[in-house]
Structures are given as C-alpha cells and as structure tokens.
Image 1 (cartoon, rainbow, N blue to C red):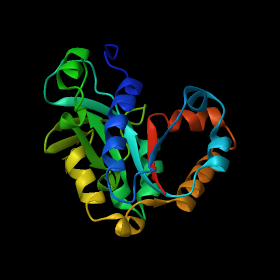
Image 2 (tube, rainbow, N blue to C red):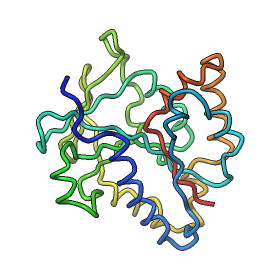
Image 3 (cartoon, rainbow, N blue to C red):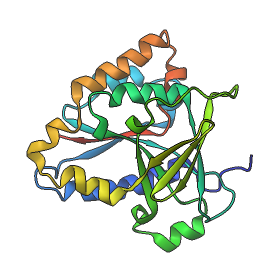
Length: 224
C-alpha cells in the first residue's frame, strides 16, 4: 500500500482547530477545549494519567481516519477501520449515539489542503459509529474493513453496508444549535468516558501500549 501523503495527525490537528473554534462560538461553550492523545500516550504511557486527570464536562468524541493516498484528490476516498477499535467505539456510543463519530477528511495531498484552508471542514465528513452496529466481523486476517466515501454515502466492505455520511459543519449545527441546555442529553458524560477508558485498560490486562494504539486518532471536545 502506498505511504500516506498527509498524516492522520496533520489532519487531526488542523481540523480540530476549526471544530474547536466553532464550538467556542456557541453560547455557554466558550471554555470548550480539545483533548488529543499525545504520541507517548499512543505508544506506551499516559492512559492512567488521562483517566485520573480527565476534566469534568461533556464530550464529543471523534475517531480520525486518514484516507489512502491513491488516487489523489479523487472520489471515492478510501479509509480503513478495524473490528477491535470499532467494537470499542460502539460501546461508548451505546448510550450517546449522537456523540461518537468516525471523521473522514477528503484530503490526501497538501495541494488540496492548501487550496481549502482555512476551511477544511468543507470537505470533511462524519459517520456515526452507532450506524455500524451490526457490521459483521471482517473475513480477512487483519480484521479490517474498507470504507469508500462518496458524499452523502459511505460504502463499507467487506460485507457491503451503505451508510450516510454528513458534513462536519452540518453535524455541529445539529448538535450545538439546539443550545447549551440540551447538550447534557446528547454528549458523553465525564463519568461515562472515564468508565469506558478504564474498561479498555482492564480488558488489555494493563498493557497500556496496546490500549494506546487502539486509541490512536481518538479525540474529544470537552464542554464544561
């Protein structure tokens, strides 16, 4: 497989900056901030620290995916998801299905990023993790599925599923446009997020390196 031309971390940092700016404009959400996994947390340490120091508030969770590099700047864009990560995310989405998403940026070259900057959200798309409930386990040995995005549709292989994707801006308007007062019933609670992270560590028998890899590309936006 060709190497990625635009890294997942580059996409995450740039797009999260735009999303955070939007959220902070919502009345009652001016103190919102982004929580992203650092490289050392992804690789070996820091999950316990994340749990113990996790700020109170309500969370919107995004699982970033970087598109394959080929073909460049062309629909459909192709992404990869895996069963283990998807099953973990589904557990988090069980009680808050409107607060956990895969995020698929349509950027695999810096030429297109430069052209669309500073509004990369114009071609960045969300898929509700909960919409993949019932996805059969992959038949390949890696436990992976290919997601082909051609807005407003996403086709998930290996066993074909046709699902709807929505632009980031539209989703943010739907969630935060209802007003601060109703966010409590939509976003993930501080307690639920801590319990979810704790369960992942327990099931990995304390192997924080393994858990860190499973959380790679995972971010939350915290609204107090």
